[in-house]
Image (cartoon, rainbow, N blue to C red; front, side):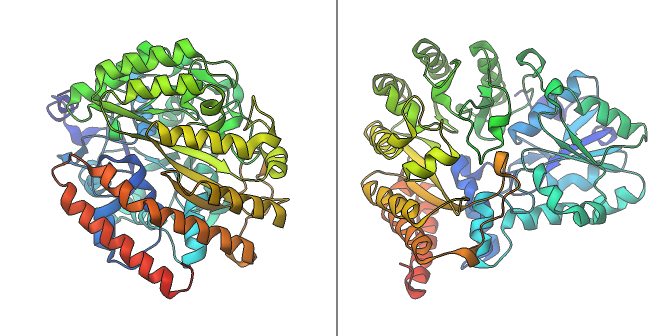
Length: 503
């Protein structure tokens, strides 16, 4: 097994200069179902914390404190540092103490460290509690072994997609001794920052990666150790340009098929993952230069991946790319369904209002017009349902310039989708991308129409949830026990919702 070579390396593993880790909610493979990880966004609730943790983010397997797999972003940084000759180890957060005695730098990967992301902030605002992921991030930095190491000179460097949140938590940065926060794609800069940290040089508190420092395809290393749930990037960036999203600010780049397959090989040869999760902001646009899918490239990719894997899923795709080329989507679905009965992806609906779509995401529907957005959604969701893709959909609530008419049209759209097997999750607006200077949407701003939309989504999700639980664990030896526990959890939530008069 590839990753086992780490355990039998001739060097003393305790002597690594750089230790990489992430909090407990990220160092999990979520029962090998990436989308169950969304449960980390919720606060403590009606079941005991230990049981909730087991259901939604159980600890990943380790050997001598080294995880069998780690978050993909962390693996990219690990690969970059190894390529530059650094002595680096990725360690599980529950075992980090034994590796800190001689470490000079602790690198921490974050996605939503304070629960300010759309899903977490929505749950926290409604339930009036701090999400699990925020609790576990704070608990990680509060570990006595990290505090002791910090006193003797350990440097703490943080990176990942959630670093924007530290701008709202300056006091936390100071109190927990975070030395440097890297914002952006770090491949070209992480080496010089780690070298400065090891040498005891002064570090920038907040390092924003410039456009000139954004890595080209050739400068992005392949992972060398397994990624959680076999996730591999097929490209970076997005060409949609939605105002509320920061990903659209990055240039669009697609990996060659050979590069993707090499990373899949790392997961397969390790013995950890024989499935893959293809990651991009819109998998259907693989190899394209605009918002029109490239038939040849997307078919080539899927035929190559299906030959290697027992099955695979997508991280994200858009409704417009599915709708614009239904025959291509059906062909891709046929390739995927050769080895599995269904697959999933995250999908952004965001609004059912053509007027609001035109204001905040005019290219979301392209090559269709923004005015056609509701029809694009209906057609795309119908195609997904017919071809066994189960989408986890998001809506944005409280966007600047949102009107009552916008909300009514979104409610009507959700009603139209009631026969589509899916999850639909409304998320409070968070100021990101070109809207980063706008005000946050809080629970106190909710109107009767907002409440009606949330109830409509809740009823939709409860209708489909039992089916989705069955699909998620079909064929697994522990399926019966887990399905039983998840169903009990759903019934408890459903009963509580009815008691509160919201269902």
